Image (cartoon, rainbow, N blue to C red; front, side):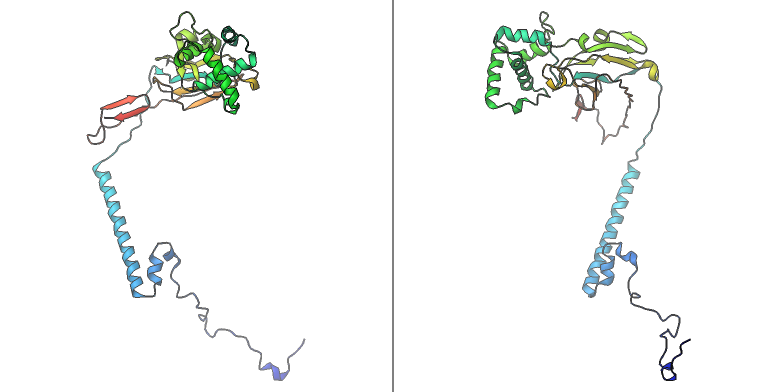
Amino acid sequence: MPQLQSGLRARVAMALPGKPNEVCHCHERDYAPWTGEIHGLSQALMSKSRKQKLFWWLVLIICIFCGIFTTVLVVIEYVEGPTATSTTIKMVNTLEFPTITVCPKVPDAFNFTNILEHIHNLIPDIDEIVARDLISYFIAGSGLENMDMIPYNNISYNKYLNNLYLTWSRGYSPGDFFDRIQISVGDPVNLNLFGYKCEDFLFHCELGGKVFDCCTQLFREKPVMRRGLCYQTFRNVNQTEADDIGRLVIEMKQLPSTTSRAYNYTQPQVIVYINDNWDYVIDFPRYYLYPHEWNRMHFTARYIELLEHPEDCTNKVYCIDATLIPE
């Protein structure tokens, strides 16, 4: 074992603290970590000048008193104006269905044979492709959707289609011509001459296990903004049995689409709107159904009754469907 020389032995020493508590004190004057969590407290404690300390302590005191004051106001308001929420589940013998409106996605479900013959009577030399473009131009000009190809036509072609449209609609106002082609409402001679009929769309309906005529007992014709001709359930179509026993079953056919070349001139989807029983169809919520699929929807109804308060509630209102305007 190696040994140190006697002359060097006295120089070897270990630097150990003389007392157990003699350790590094570099952070012993720091404030507690929680002081940095309260905004302004660390500034008040660490400020060097008396003016800064006075300013920050004044800010802290003002904030504390403001917080206490607003808390007291909230508590007083809650105590003086109590609220109560009561949830009651009631079993009823019958419950009205929401309004169910079904529409083809592309508003061009026409009888193309009839409409092409009608165009040929006024424009004999038009071919089928231009006739379909003319129908697209008419639909887009009526404010209906899914006519995305029209903006991509060049200006000269759209002007050409406009001249054809003026010839085709000669003798009609834009509104009357729209009704004649899309709906033909009020015209017993040409009723649904070009548009699709209810029987072309709604194939089979059941309610509570009983078969109903879709077109006379459950659904009525309904024009819908941006969608054209649709069909909507009547008022007072009620569920009288529980759950699946009282369900409404609707089987639909796939309608044609005059302008949808990408889908082989058939409708790619059906749009279903679910609303309360208002006069107008609200755009949301809506659901997209695909052909050859079975879709199941479950609806729940909720009735909200507010407690009357002379300062907060009024019975004098003006309503238009989903819009409520207090007088």
